[in-house]
Image (tube, rainbow, N blue to C red; front, side):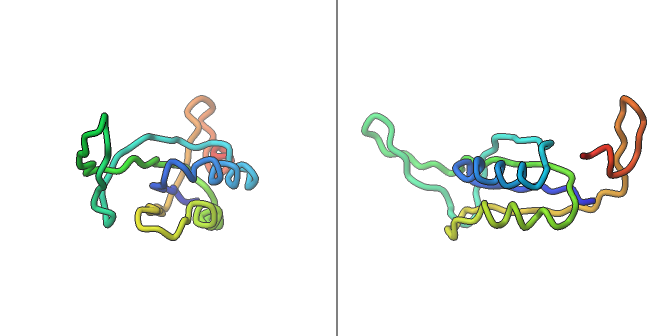
Length: 109
């Protein structure tokens, strides 16, 4: 099992979510975040006034899955533009369901 932390563009989330659902992944956490990277911000316009936006809106997805499901995220989150995001893969030694004290991969799915 691996813990996946994926930082993606908000506009690709519906496609990524559908792809994960098709793979049988219906448990994940989603957080709205803001960050900066190589795209180095952009200029916004509010009531006719330009302003610098240092951070871009992103979504951070967290889930524990089998290794092969990283490809589903990659396939649907890629736009080919700077700012597509990152995927971090972290080994998971064990998972425990608190309510029943069950252990192992069965508690994740």
